[in-house]
Amino acid sequence: MNQNPVLIADSQGANPDSTATAATYRKIAWRLLPFLVFLFVLAWIDRVNVGFAKLAMLDDLGFSEAVYGLGAGIFFIGYFLFEVPSNLLLEKIGARRTLARITILWGLTSVAMAYVESPMSFYVLRFLLGAFEAGFFPGVVLYLTYWFPAAQRARINGMFMTSFAIAGVVGGPIAGFIMSRMVGVGSLANWQWLFIIEGIPSVLAGIAVLRYLPEKPAQAKWLTQAERDHVSQVIAREDAAPEKHSDLRSLVRNPKVWLCALVYFCIVSGNATIAFWTPSVIKSLGIDNNMTIGLLAAIPFIIGTLAMVWNGHHSDQTGERRAHCAIAALLAGLGLIATGLCLGSATLALIALTVAAAGILAAFPVFWSIPGAFLAGTAAAGGIALINCIGNLAGFVAPYMIGFLRTLTGSLSAGLYFVAALEILAAVMVFLLFKDVRVSESA
Image 1 (cartoon, rainbow, N blue to C red):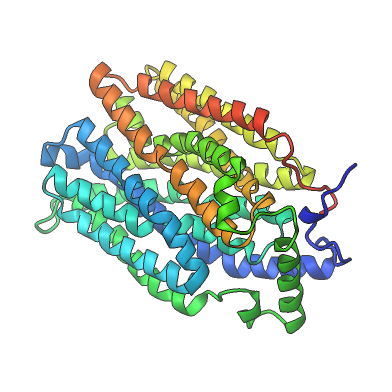
Image 2 (image 1 turned 90 degrees about the horizontal axis):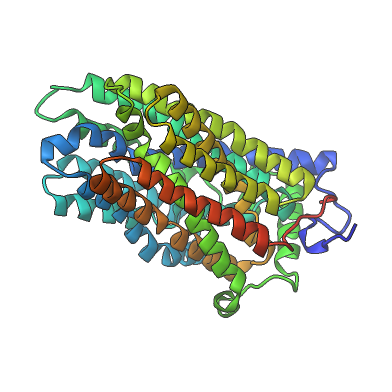
């Protein structure tokens, strides 16, 4: 079988699967990933808790479904505008200061959401939340490329991206508990307490970033000198490979970057759908208790977590990327179609939504191993951010279209079918356009 030495973690004889090297990468993973997952869980909860606040906020403020859909989605306009600058800034000033700034500012903005009074203030704060959070996810994806070779990145990305699912698992019950228990407490509504209680931990976590995260392997005092040298040399050798693009000019001219952005747009549309509309889907099935809604909303994310980890691990084991990503996206599309068809049955609709969540979440870690196969250096910083910010525009389009179509038709089904079509389109594009993306099985 032909092997691509660029994608072999250490072609100089230090096989990353050897006992000593594997132990080094395990040490790095255990040190960095739990903290990064915790940060993203906070970010995700603060991003999507508006879906639970919606259950009471719309009536209190007199907002329509269309106002909510626009406000939920406008987050991604701020995200789009500031994401590439944020990631390029990370490359210049370092991960610690960038991630700390991002985390503190989004936490403060989340707290401010408690004082929304009009559609305009809702739109402004959601826009600012997106602007402040911009750069966090691609920043972490870039940060992990400083530590792990390409042959391990689908697995590592999958472990980090379990934060999507973990946030759904813990975020739903926590939000349901707050919404249930904080009714009539003080002079604030339960949805106001939700924003305040879930925003403060992000501010504290942002301060902790400055003390906990090392910039790169060379600054990791918890590694031995030999371990620091080995990891740094492996990454430097991969980044210097002639097959990789490392400058911004080649990035803009590379059609694969734009294809990745289009594919990611389609995948993210499904993620935004389950994030912002799962509570509403469950409520539409005739379930009114906030705590019950929160517990049921966790089920799709639990299954999605398992699917995400398994798909990333299996992709690394086999060295195959295209089918792992395409089949997951196809499953997401079919699950969303089935959800729309089964809205009359609570059990069947929840099963279909769980299938959709499994496909959506399983596509992410494998997808994010694809750009690293042809980008490095500054191009990786800009490319990952560019793909992510364009793709995340789906986070604006999908919630708005679902809200618009629900207002127009009186049903969630039309919006679910719209998003399902995008997921199926993603599957087709990945299968047809990325035939050459593969990791050597010996890596």
